[in-house]
Amino acid sequence: MREPAFWYRPRSFESHALRPLGALYGAITERRMLRQGVDAGIPVICVGNYHVGGAGKTPTVLALTRLLRELGETPVVLSRGYGGRLKGPVMVDRARHIAADVGDEPLMMARDVPVVVARDRLDGVALAKSQGATVILMDDGFQNPRLLKDTSLIVIDSERGLGNGEVFPAGPLRAPLQAQLARTDALVLIGDGRAANDVAAELAKRDKPELRAHLKPDAASVAQLSGKRVFAFAGIGDPERFFRSLRAGGIEVARTRPFADHHMFSDDEITALVTDAQREQLTLVTTEKDLARLRGREGVPDSIVPFAVQLEFADPAALRQLISDHLYTARARRFGRR
Image (cartoon, rainbow, N blue to C red; front, side):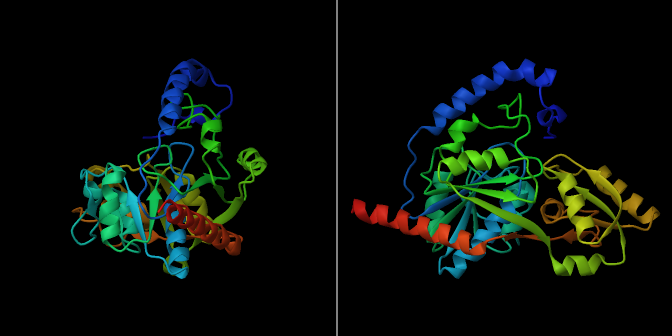
């Protein structure tokens, strides 16, 4: 889905006309969020968004994976598998599955961490625990009440913020903002922008911390593209952020082509990208998530370069303390019930 431009414009006619539908959608979602979830028996950390589209959840999940392992935990990611045909529960196997089976993000993350795909996330809990999970990392699902969440971290791109602040389809929010703020344990702001400062201030009033982070280009990816002119394409929530990351890494971006989030490339589109790049003597480069969707496709050249990024927190000690405290509280609460 390509986001409507009016979502990120204040006081547009389209948004005003769709506001009644947004109010209905928001009321249904808010009521649904009030349901009591089922306890997984082990801590569940949810990494979510207030809005539709991407903001950096996947890099955040991978950063938390590294931290949890440093703390001696065994994390397993639980995902709905958006864009995949398998309902699950199933362990993602990069040797056997493609993005059309399990979704692009689970396929990409499975390189670094065990990933369970389950359309009904509760169905995936037993499979995650069978893999020795001591902590479940939920990729998305903040608004889904099926599973009890011990900790909810909300990711926002600080450059884009929450757009016009309206509920879908009038705007990008998945539910009324106040209802979502009430269920947030910490805010992860990616980048140096100020578009989400008001949200951070609201959460600060509730004694909920703000964690700043940045997407840092992978050194090996930068070295591979150094001195080359590139044709960058991406089908993610915010393709322009990817193009900015390339330029910030010192890469000469000669051409760009954005696609909608989770875009499934047609054969003709792949052929056109390859042909244009060859004609202009450019190196094709894309995101790791996009390349995951292209894996196993005929006609996809090995010369397409994935540009990897890693999320780095400005205050890793604060994140470590937050996660440690929440894990302790989650386990103490369960121990107290026995």
